Length: 234
Figure 1 (cartoon, rainbow, N blue to C red):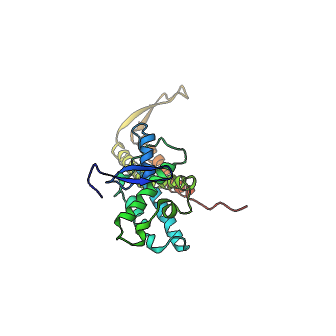
Figure 2 (cartoon, rainbow, N blue to C red):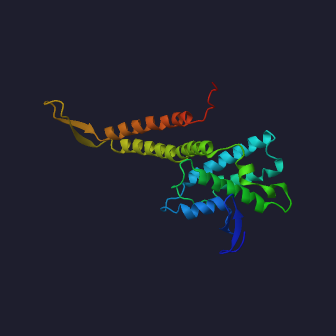
Figure 3 (cartoon, one colour):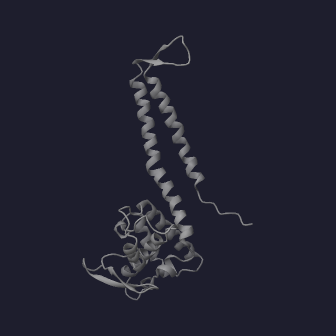
């Protein structure tokens, strides 16, 4: 986009507002930066990436339903860029905002729309991509933000927690073999007799390995439980 320090004018239902020209966000994101500059905690990128997945899926469905012209589906490509982290610098909003995540929802909408507009050839249909009319078509932050939270949770579990648990399990198994020849003392407070019991040091490690295996095997079930199912109509 333009040189650092320069600005462009974006408008919303309130009034025009100056936005840094080097960024893709729009008026509502800029207003949030000014009015909700509370603390250093920004919205986790895992949420941003997941919300972009929601936007892409919604755009594909709207296209297939004939609600979104095919020429505007460059918004989908922009959402993929967000998912892969290429546009992480475009999401500066704090976590301290409205409860439904409305400001972050609009931040994502604006970035997708402006990325589509500024990357499109002059006169192309996707050069008229609008954040509310096209990117946010048929959506509400009350729905898409909680959905993004579920997606982010599952992705973090699958990509972070589950591999870590499996690595822990393997490490504990290895320690149980290393400690197999070591004898330690275990005390019991349940009986007066046999106060001191000889134990192999591998026992606690093996028990911990068994525990970590059981917990790791529960992870896929937890992820399936968080999958989104349509609510039955009454």
